[in-house]
Length: 139
Image 1 (cartoon, rainbow, N blue to C red):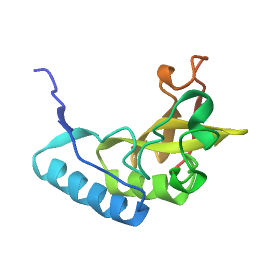
Image 2 (spheres, one colour):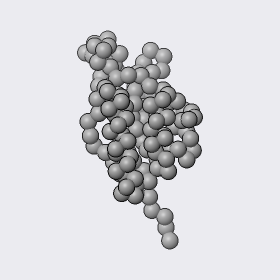
Image 3 (cartoon, one colour):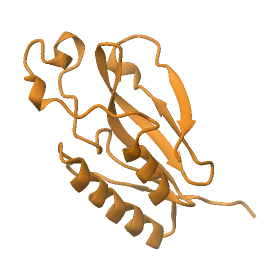
């Protein structure tokens, strides 16, 4: 017999209010768990909203004012630790904004409490360079 993992995906709007985002993520995780999902894919920028301008304008240099940027988070920060705690036996994929030097990136984290780790990748479209991978403790 082959093991099958049920997958759930969320298509919803997430803004800059991180506490509201975390509450919505908790509800999505709970609903997916109730339906037997082992993997939940959340939108790319579900923690803090989208970094909407890529390239030279992404840090407010052109079209975006600095106060309209999403909050910068770390893969080992409290927000992704909370997502990992919500995940428990599931794997949850969530998007957030991180900084590397002076640049911001729309990044994706895979969290699971089983391993106690959150891993992050930057989508290839974020800047046209290689996309570093890091892993850090989610606890």
